[in-house]
Length: 139
Image 1 (cartoon, rainbow, N blue to C red):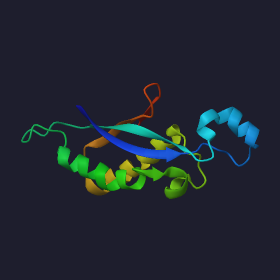
Image 2 (cartoon, rainbow, N blue to C red):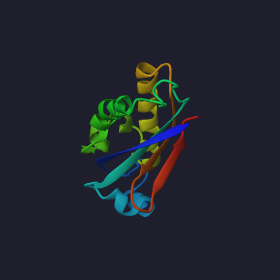
Image 3 (cartoon, one colour):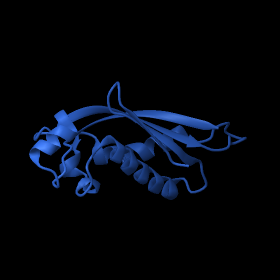
Image 4 (cartoon, one colour):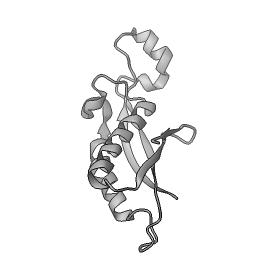
């Protein structure tokens, strides 16, 4: 069985590679290379998989899952400039692909610490815009 929960956060970033010239960065990243950055209203879907507990009829306590996201993910990125405030992006371009992988790492660590007996993190989906959605399988 699989359960997905949806969360929202806002963050800004600038896509830029020091190894490229200004013109090359503008050509590659377009408006995402704005020197002042730009923001998105992201939607994060967290999917967990596991067996249904015969007593509770659930695969996970939704409050526990919400607490993990609220405490282990959102404070690190919500209303943050990812280039400046998120250590993982010191040497990593904060594309949404990389953001999905970073969030996946944070969630894996949180699940190991808080839900060692299960369920398992199955996938995350990160919506950046109405046209850009990124899916990351964690299995």
